[in-house]
Image (cartoon, rainbow, N blue to C red; front, side, top):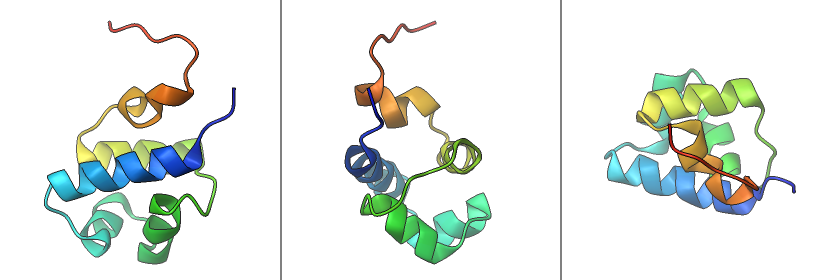
Length: 77
């Protein structure tokens, strides 16, 4: 199963909005270019694992909460 980057982007945007952050603020908090945040949220680019970790940390989210629908099996620890 491949990562659904469109769903990941939508979920990332939802976390960002819920956190009250603009794309620029998230970019600054995660040390990522603001244009990359836009591309990721639109599903227009693939996200590397290091970038995904930076975004999850900046949002206080877990990686699985961002990509859970792309996982074949999930289990809460």
